[in-house]
Length: 90
Image (cartoon, rainbow, N blue to C red; front, side, top):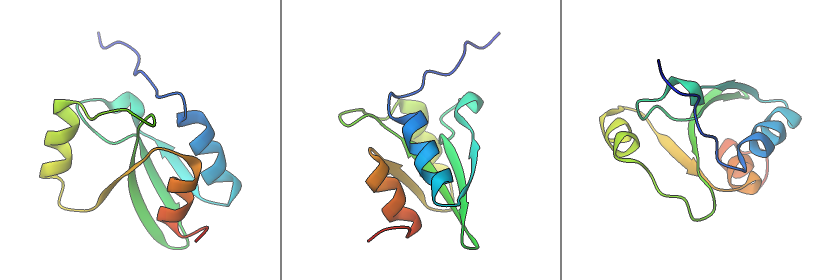
């Protein structure tokens, strides 16, 4: 049985901010195996986002998943990072 996913401290705050600007957010943190934390839809675009603490590092599984994914995976460390990636702020 898999243990519950460990969330970075800023995870809940970032999800709330994304939803606050009207983005759809599917939390994927429980998937594990290196899969990014969030699938975000905003203004007709999709974003695959990995949430990290300000000084957090990627696990070997995350590095492998990101390398094999044939699309963009963005890493965010703050609310501003997340909102900038989706184009909600400059």
